[in-house]
Length: 264
Image 1 (cartoon, one colour):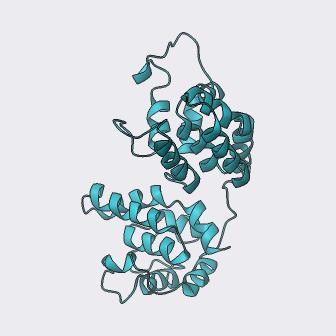
Image 2 (cartoon, one colour; image 1 turned 45 degrees about the vertical axis):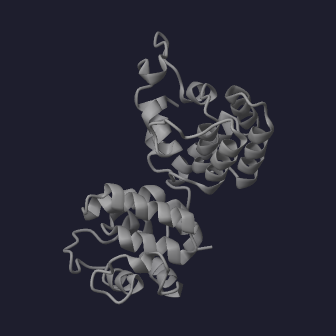
C-alpha cells in the first residue's frame, strides 16, 4: 500500500477515538509528550498532513530518493499517539489497542521507544489486515437500511443535554426532525432528492445539518466529551454554513462509530 492510498483511507476515520485521547492525556501527565506548539488538532489531521507531503521532504526533512510504502511510513513515525491512533481508528481490536497503550506508557521515556512498544503489539500487518477486510466488505460495519435507522432513531431519548442547546430548525426536538426526514426518504421529499434508494450510511453522509448529527450520536450514548468537541469545532470552523458544519461534525462523529452505538 502506498502512503497516498493510506491517506485516502484515513480520511474516513474517526478523528478523536477514546483510547488515543486518554493516551495523550496520560503521556502529558507523564511529561513525555504534549500538544504544546503542534500544528495539528488531532492525530487524524497529523496523519493527513504528514502523508500529503510524503513524496517530498516535508516539515521533517525526509530524504526522497527512494519511493516508500505505507508500512515504511508507519514504522518510522516517532509520535506515540499518532502510532496508536492509526491502530484504533482503523478498527484493530480494542483489546490490542489497550495493550498497546499500556505498553507505550510503560516503555522508556524516549518517543522512539514508546512507538516501538506500540508497534510490537499493533504491527503494520494488523492494520493492513483490517484495512483490506474493510475494502473487501466496503465498510467496517454492515449496511443498514433507512427503515432500520428510522426504528433506531425512534428508540432513542428525544432529548439530550448538549444537543438541546442547539437550534432545532423549527422542530420541537431533533428526534422529530430525524423522523420526519427519514419517513419521506423513499421519495424526492421536501428537498427534491433525485436518488433515494440508498442505505443508512449514505443518508448520514448526505445530511447537511450538523446539529441533527450531533443529537443522533449524543442520544445514542456517545461520550459527552466527544460531543462537546464536535460542537465546539462546528461553531469555531463552520462559519454558519450548514454543509461545512455537517462535514466538521462527521469528522468527529463518523458513521462507522455511530452505527455501533445505534445498532448494538
